[in-house]
Image (cartoon, rainbow, N blue to C red; front, side, top):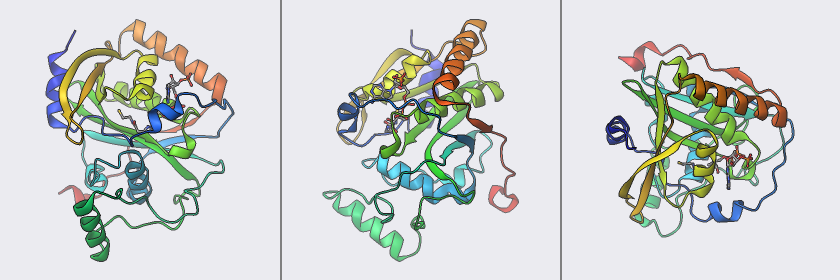
Length: 267
Ligand SMILES: CC(C)(COP(=O)(O)OP(=O)(O)OC[C@H]1O[C@@H](n2cnc3c(N)ncnc32)[C@H](O)[C@@H]1OP(=O)(O)O)[C@@H](O)C(=O)NCCC(=O)NCCS
């Protein structure tokens, strides 16, 4: 059943955004690796912004420019988390962030101008973050009244189907519980079968549709919402899924405490 609160939350955010076309179908048949990955999930900090922007642009190329990660980090109702690992895997030569796709004429022009003016995201020469590890994915949450709205989740293309999206979703639910939310809700493209499978695994139900929600191709959004995350049934299922995750991929390290906010930026 559609929850009216989920709709009000969506009106204030962009919803889960538009993923890169094509990867969805191709990935369905890829083998899973199930190896221990030495993952850390921590709160995003300002220094992570260029790396997260890169992942964002790779994952959501038609939804550009990206949100203002730097500004959102200072909001008390928004939380970002990043996944870091030590495994090998590069951006294909560290050639800099993916650019808007060809055909997006004016977007490419703005992208170039922003970089010429020094306003674009700085392009790190490697994907090693300041703690010497690779940022391989990120997710964000907006708390609107008692609803946690999953606004974005993305994993580096080369590192998908290795449990990173799942651990990010576990992190989002943990944060939602910590922020005293009663449910987690999101929108996703009707065609995004991979993401929907992930959400369904964690107990999200389809509660409605937003017709022609995505402006690039007029695609519908599916609204997916959990039951009450504080209920004993949700917690039991969540706990069991987390236990199975650890069995399969190893224990991730959790560093979800909110980093200290910058005084000047929050004024
Ligand atoms: C969606 C996304 C975050 C998933 O991340 P991931 O690291 O590849 O996913 P995981 O390996 O953690 O998968 C966890 C579960 O999700 C489901 N899943 C993820 N990708 C899937 C796919 N391509 N096909 C089918 N199921 C998939 C499976 O149930 C999987 O559990 P399993 O391994 O037991 O089968 C990733 O594909 C991505 O970044 N996509 C582009 C951005 C995007 O679409 N974001 C969502 C916007 S709403």
